[in-house]
Image 1 (spheres, rainbow, N blue to C red):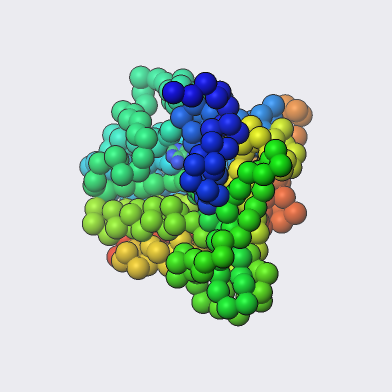
Image 2 (image 1 turned 90 degrees about the horizontal axis):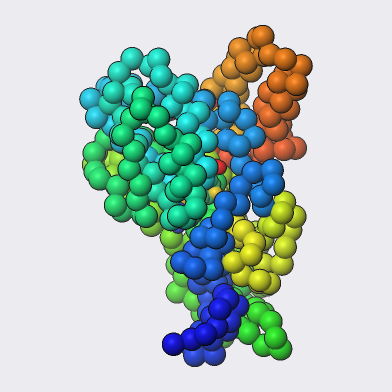
Length: 365
Ligand code: SAH
């Protein structure tokens, strides 16, 4: 029994018993602890929350992604049953916009079964209310992708992979050593393991010449998830769209960051109180998917991807008959999604598909 009632106390105790823990273990607890984890506590999204995401910025994002999904379903030969899967649906906004935009795609809604993968009880509630309505396809919630049934699927994940726990390695004179989180002098602090880390085997070729002192982040959870998504696509047919932030190519660098109320926060201070994310290594995800037999397309910058999907035309449609205030919201939302200085370049889209499917919309130059 313990009467310690916050995550700092629990992690301190764990470190006292086991010794320093990995950055990934710290991140996993800070985000996912069933009682004190950041995502377990409340809805962190939106203007009044800690961060805001593309579907919350503009309805055009979910609409275009929805049409992309319907398009992939048609490329698959319009199977009579398809699982539309979303990982980490947040408030359910992307999916609601996607479904509205695809209502008139012949046969699509009749084929769709929704599978939403969400661990947060608060956000599940929110998704249930956003996605209520008689005319919507049947909905199912799961705690993990592994619980989604097999079969043809189209999967989307926006700002999901950045929340998966990363390990940090630091280059010594000859080897990579894992950074660990210790507790001393009243706070969490980073230490470096004296032993070479076996996780160095997961680093791609671009890390080979990194100088001493370089930091590398590896996310085994993301690699194994990309591998299992790919294996499902190969077996059951389908496609996956992963949108997140990170560079096109792998490379050394420290990107783990904490955000609270839209401002940077110290990563190790106050676990559970701030969102923790790290850049997604798209090159590593693509490699894991290709090893599992899928085809990988991209990553392409979000601005380029949305332009190819026709965001300009969609914007024109929304502007017709809009009030001045609505016009401003449509235009500023659209700009925010595509402009290089905003989300247009840092965010990327990566598609994984069954190898026999054509190059997905938005990925052909
Ligand atoms: N896709 C949404 C929300 C992004 S925030 C949007 O674009 O607005 C990340 C989402 O992933 C939240 O819904 C969070 O609760 C969920 N999440 C985080 N880690 C998860 C995990 N390991 N398994 C399932 N869901 C997770």
